[in-house]
Image (cartoon, rainbow, N blue to C red; front, side, top):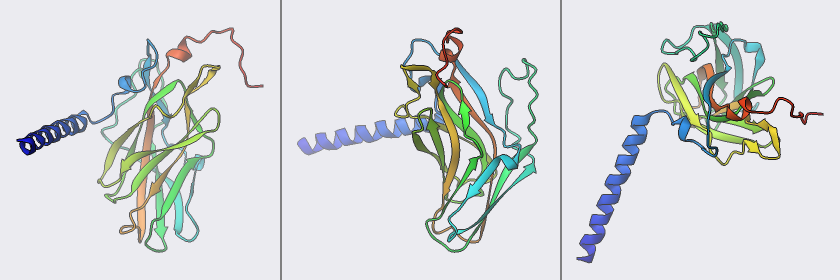
Length: 238
């Protein structure tokens, strides 16, 4: 009887875990309004971080014994990309014609990695909940990670996901709550900055030439603290 009871409990637990996994898969993107809720009110808004329009604003690095990397911009973009809510009503007509492409020529197989980063970090106002961008992964089993920095210089990396898909795909990652974005001592310093992203290659597929493309990085951020900041408060930047 005791063995049957244990088996029954294990069966129930497995069914529950499968249900939770199915719900997370069906949900698709993480719910920004449920991430790191630490205030009574939120003012969530989707904002543009970069549209990758200028290749000269980006740089790339790979260890010299692993390969060569080059960047170039191309006309085009994902057809399924939707405009940012509120931009058309506000009359904002930002340029959105190009994408950023990276070409990597590997010298040998192995646990290779390369990084792409802006000339200056890209700040995001408010408390960032999620960050998304469109990627062409070319169906390789490589892993994309995002590199962030807070206002005090602390850096963190977040795994965005695998690049094992063909064509354009929107990848979204939630910003975990262990990344501190607010300090109650400094009300004018909150949020994070994007300092780049890294791709770690699968050693079985890190050979020959690899192409990857990026477009339209966005963030869903809580701007309640920004909108309700006192106008006569001093700025600690001197």
